[in-house]
Every structure is written in C-alpha cells, then in structure tokens.
Image (tube, rainbow, N blue to C red; front, side, top):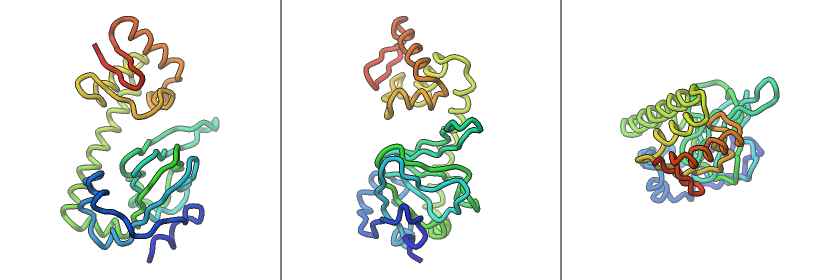
Length: 219
C-alpha cells in the first residue's frame, strides 16, 4: 500500500519516488543500506513551519528522516508549557515509535523542513537485512549516548556547568559551532535565555570562553 494512503491529510502532498538516492546516501550513510523495497515506498515531504507531523495519540504509520530544517518532539506540561523531547535536524525522528501503538508526544516543524517518510511496515521488514539492522543498532546506540549526556547535563546545578558540559561533550577539542539560535540552545540546556547570556558574558569576561557569534571556544 502506498504511503500516501496513510499520511494524514494535512501532510498529503508527498512527492513520489523520484528520489535521488545517490545523493541521499552520501548525506546520510544509514540510508545507503535501506533495501530497495523500502526505498520504492519512501516519500518526500516538504512542509512549512509550524506544520504538525503527528499528534499525541496518533497511530504511527511511518518512520521519518529529517533531511533539512528542524522537527521537534513536544509534550505539553500541566501548566501548558512545552517540553522539548527531541530536536531532529538531520536524522531520524521518534525512533521509539517503531513498535508502539500510538505516539506519546507531538511532532511539529520548527522551520520549513524536508522529510523522508518510510512506511513503518517496510521499515520493520528492512531490519531483517543484516547490514541495515546493524546500522540501525549503531544509530540507536549513538542516540542513547546523547540522551544520557543530556540527562547528565540537566542534572548540573549552574548555567556555567551546563555550558561547559555541552562544549566538552558536543564540541571538538573545546570548540563548538551552534547549529541553532542561543535562545533555542538555552531551552535545550534547561535555562532561560537571560541566564544563558549572563553565564556566557561572565565566562567571556573571566577569560574562560571566547564567544564569536555561534562559535564557542574554551580557553
């Protein structure tokens, strides 16, 4: 069954299989091992900012891969605020939904985005292929390490400690180039943007950090 029969109507502007898989696999090596039957059913979605990909309680029908832009997994707090569970910028979205009967959160595009939608049944069948299964297991292991690092970071008490932890775990040799605004980064760190700006200013003034727009360097 074609994926477009399952995509919610609000997203049913999918582009069918004229996908350039050669370019896609260069940009995302895991896709290189996706078997041909799954490729034939994969669709490209071009969505605008604030578009809802799925909502809490929806039944999963596809696995999504974000090619460009940003999609966020969001859960609402009792007070009505948003809790961001995942920011997918170039990679799979909501991996844990593969074997679930319903989504436990919402997925919303934070900016205009391009996504691949791979039918869930086709994706599950693809995992029988050893090369793709091994790549998927390695991907999940990397994501687990990220989640653990983020949990460790959020347990730190001060804004300075969280900034240092982020640069040391997500950067390279004490240097990190932010791929998001500082306001969004503050939310990821569990801080207000005012608290983050104060911490960055104090660290820069103390000679501990060099701040050059989106580039942060530990001294």
